[in-house]
Length: 113
Image (cartoon, rainbow, N blue to C red):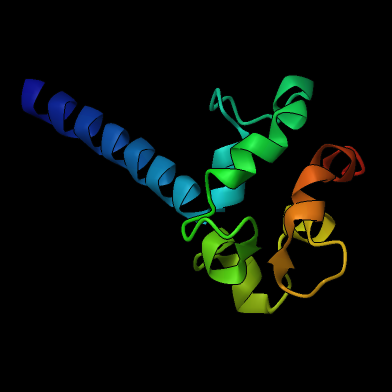
């Protein structure tokens, strides 16, 4: 009886761990950078801090974010559509979030529903 309980508990824990891994795997680096407190919500303070948070993704320190710096494989890429956050940040839709768009990120993020 105890063995069955342990196996069921382990199975539930494994399922929750797998779900957590799967959910985090779908998050974009942009979302991870913006959601500083990791509560799943980008609040007003995090929106205000967006320019600094986004620049943490600038791997080559050129002052802009390329497609490679802000994406990884996810459902949106499979469908060919960028995530809504990327769509509003990349105002001119050239697959680069440039310095002006980074500076304007709080206003852009505020347009999201």
